[in-house]
Length: 421
Image (tube, rainbow, N blue to C red):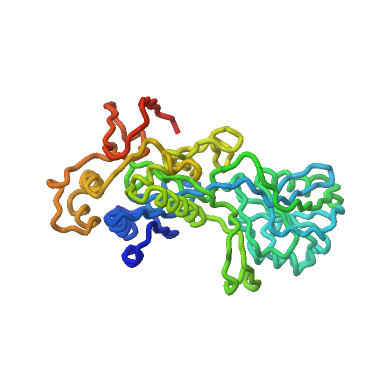
């Protein structure tokens, strides 16, 4: 981090993190404070431990913490059953040579993870497999191939809801479906005395865009509340991080053997670079803005609505909590003209640390052993001039405008509401 600042960077992106720890023990938080004090904003991935609550990484308020959501693109692979029912799944293996004819459908109840097929004939069949991870295991795909299977339907784990994570290493015709749809497919495959006659095929429809609703919170995106600083709402923002088409170093094999110049990857590590690029756009338009002002502009211009005009949903298609989306989904078209800007400097953050953790922690994080809380003051989390806050940490009081640097267009109208989550 120090070397990057010396090199003159305008923004830093860090797709790295771990479990929540106190800020004065968090090396990323300490390093990011030094970066911020030099006028550089640190953008960090929020972590991939969702949907469990309080699983965030990089929780310090001087860091821009990014969660992950879907985009409006689907790599559609539809499973059509012999009874006419169809279920839209996804797959990067868009094998247009795969026949649309009906194949025998088989669900191996004794080995539902499809890691072996001893004594079972699956030749020419579409096999239905369970998964224990967000991604279909490569060994299961290889087992189906080795046993002569024609194709495979992978059923998503239940915790992932409508989040389907795809990758580019499957050479077998396949589709990944949600747990809800998978249960219906399983029921069809094994019900009644005529189960052996049940059939299915997989229809590949390439890449479909303008899918609604989008964005949806990715199931893996880590959630608040902020364990290190409960009064600061995290993540700060949500950005595209599910099934992102990206350049890929050809010397790094995908799936163990094959090389490609591109890949489709998922994670908050993909979401953070999107926001980093937007930070660069803001810095280009407003080079005089502080890291906190840039961060505020991104957060206050974000959207809490999806492309259907409804509130952004989570992986279960429920209204997403602010512990999932923070201020909302980033909107690159609006960030350079936010109007209202919440600004903070080293002194503000130092007073916040004094209030949260005390003077020894403040000295550790700021790297200034001569600085005292008596000199900088001490404030509770709720008094930090932050673009959002956890309502559970607020008390009845007044709303005041504290920035003298950025003026709001007249007249000022404030509509303060607490939205239950």
